[in-house]
Image (cartoon, rainbow, N blue to C red):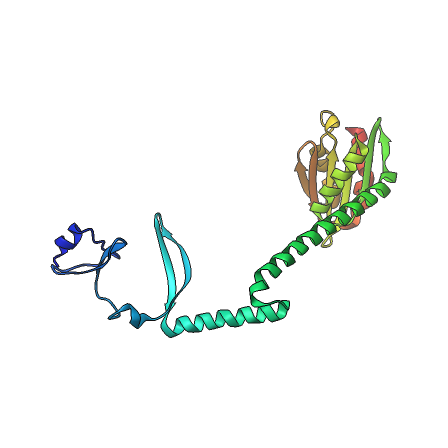
Length: 243
């Protein structure tokens, strides 16, 4: 039919193609009507099986499906069945039971992760208890400076645990990571008006050859001179006294 007649009937043109005066309109009643530069099969039976392999968005309000047809579609299904059969043998369940088995495995993994976290928290609490022996009174304020294992995350978690145990006080922790020094200072909320963790770290950071800063309640620094960690920790008590 003519191009104008096809458009009048609601046909859609795609891909910026140019059309002549006479066009081919392919219509699926009640579904779509489109202009087509030429079909690639005489009938749908020539196509055979169609297996959709993907679907996604390509533009606002436009989605695209990807599929294989004919023998490639059969190959695709056979490969999927082979993978399912291998998974079934590995998991020692029937093919239909593979999804449920995988869900149970993920649930067990999550539970193991939670148990590991609980054990870590117990270990931290025990380590925090041992570190409490290093606490000293400086101008009436409890100050705890100690070396611990781990990196920045572990120092922050340990500092939070120690602050809870102290109730009121200042914590300065240090660790050696990748042959470098990491320092962290934490101040309980009731003392942030008098002491700043950021100021404490600013004064201690040069000892380890670094710089640092942070908020009044927690600050961190890093430096290359890990051998001077103990010196920085001892200086922490003096620094609090000077502040």
